[in-house]
Amino acid sequence: MPEVNDQKITAGSKKEQILLAAVEMFLDRDYYQVTITDIAGRAEVGKGTVYEYFSSKEVLFKESFSYCAEAYLQSFRKHFSGSSSIRGTMHDIIKTHLDLIKDNRKRLHLLFNERPLSFQELQAWVIESRQELLQGIVDLIEEGLELEQIRPGINVEMAGRLFLALNYVVMGGMVVIDNVDVGEEQITALLDIYWHGIGNGPAS
Image (cartoon, rainbow, N blue to C red):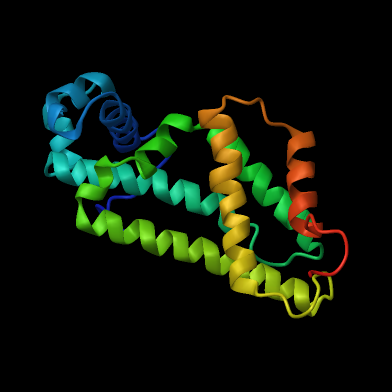
């Protein structure tokens, strides 16, 4: 994960106030158009206060990215252990991701648009975080095999990649690109297709 300042971030703290202001500024404008003065104004603090927490605009950008990214990952980690119903857990993961997209569309954009990738360490983080999510899904599927809730012989890595694609490409595309009001009916339909497949009988 990108290097961050070791000062603890607490909800409602001045540091969080600056971070949230920075996120909004970096979403509104290109990175090189944003200034510390702009961020200080949005956060309603003095320019000097920003520098008390962040030594430069680059450091502030990286911490803004990290702040959003950690919140995104943490929302998924809670689903990756102690499940008795694998399908139920998958439903919860889809619902969590859908709620994140709906409630934090702009902040999630900061994680996945082209601008953060200009920093090499952030690009590496995106790869690492995707791998963490994939491994969590793979572990969940393997748990389902042990519980005999998933058919034996399945390629767990491909099943995990497909599940991630359902979240990112299908659900994300429906909400962000197609502007569809996705609800429980669509979640259930999507998971049913994933869980049962679309074939009728043995493969020819």
